[in-house]
Length: 156
Length: 225
Image (cartoon, rainbow over all chains, first blue to last red):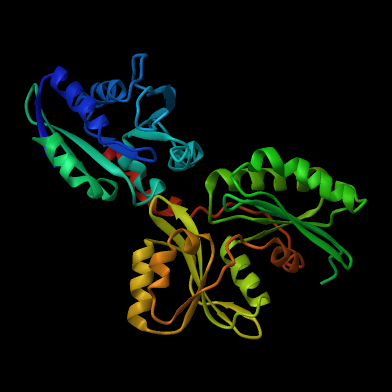
């Protein structure tokens, strides 16, 4: 399922609308080259979950928790970035796959690098750079398949 | 075997349980069922020791479940076991959640093929196959699988098998569909079975996460992209 965006504002909106598809317990692995707009996407996603403070890249903090305000039972957004993690132990230590069971979702930038740590039920979001401003945002993963219709609406 | 006083620590599922052996006396306790390992484990051990009129320093062995299972539980159990062993000089014995289930099922009278199934969360289970006769024999290595694949494999092969573990409880409908499968209610790896293994050679214990090994290869290729 893919959605094409042009410019950061459109990528942010794609993130905001994507947030409406999320449920408590979701782990989203977000990938794309540096500068593709991963953090921009997450900023929109955070707004879509009702996070009031601004989401910044967690590159130097590994994981940030944001309190969410929405009516879908998602109380916390765990925003992680595993790019600078030097060992998988550190990713395991985050225990994100278990933390999300407590009314939360996790978005992991560069998460596909450590995908097996997160298990099979994940949603993957890959942002591809197609031109200066153009991006193709592809959503897949076993965790996404049970909401294909809503994903298709998001993509169109 | 000769071990007289041993403590068993079990935190690989949402439950937290311990057991204590002192000569002929043994007692298992479920401290919490709902993921409160960090809150209940240390006080629970202290209370159990007190009821036996023992001090931590009296322990000869600490048997700890090293996984696979609930990560946030295992690190509490392992950290506590390491600290206790370090402080008291007791020997540390690591056992797996899957073998504890097999030994528990054996103790409960199950014979024949057994599939121990621990909930791996995120749509996966940790599994290992055992043959239960006079002894408990492992017939495969611990693995991470999708429950549906386990069910299909056993349904296809048609052999009689008993399933146990919290992974079975979670995916009960799937496992109940295996034609020659029997579901055994044993869900939490039993700590009394862990006490039975206290006579094993003590040594360093490392957690068994199972997912880690798969991930290493991906991770080291990061900079090559």
